[in-house]
Structures are given as structure tokens and as C-alpha cells.
Length: 142
View 1 (cartoon, rainbow, N blue to C red):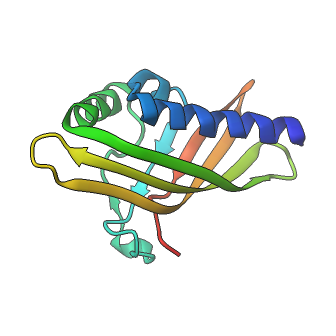
View 2 (cartoon, rainbow, N blue to C red):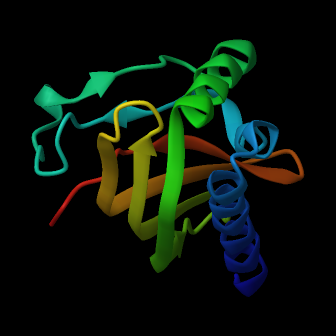
């Protein structure tokens, strides 16, 4: 069990490094091909009926284009992340990481802030020999 927790920790850390360095390829390396990412329009929007699907199912080229443009448009001010919990399924093939984040981006042209602050749920599945993120809720304040 500790080995699996270590592997999930590594994926969370890899994702953090990807945001910190704006490394699109590193970010895309964590996603399963069936990854979906529902996102609340506001971090107080707990009702999933109000969430949106911006990117749809993972598509390497589409998501690479999206995040490349995002990193060109926004400058990272800070990216603070802390794992609150890692849970592993009894079968050792599914995992959940609960991560509190405080990530602030500023639009390079307008100066408008894009602040991701709250709690996320990151869901992983063991695919062959590696773990991949299959689902992630957007940031919510609890």
C-alpha cells in the first residue's frame, strides 16, 4: 500500500511541476486516454448540475493546444499544493488524491486574475504498469 501511495504522490508532484514550469508535455503525461475534467464555473458551485465540460474526453493534440495557449496567455504568480488524503481501493487498482490548491495566474495582457483556490479530487486508475488520472473535479471551496 505504501508503494502505491508513493506512486500517487509522484503523479501529484509531477502535475505540480508541470504547472510550475508550464511544461505541457509533462502535464499531459499524467492523463489516461479516457480522462474527463468537469469544472465548476465558481469554486463555490457544489452542485454538479452547474459544472461545465471545457475540453471533453482527453485528446492529446487538442489538450496540448489548449494548455500551450493557456501558458502563453497567463503568467503563474504562485502554485501552492498540499495533499490532504490519498485513498487506495481494496483491489489496489484505483486511487483518490484530495489536494488543496492555491494557484494564481494573471493574464499577461489584461492583468485579470485567474485564481484556483480550494480542494480538488484527483482520481487515478492502474493501467498496465502505470497509474493515470482518469477524472478530476475542478477546484471547490468547502
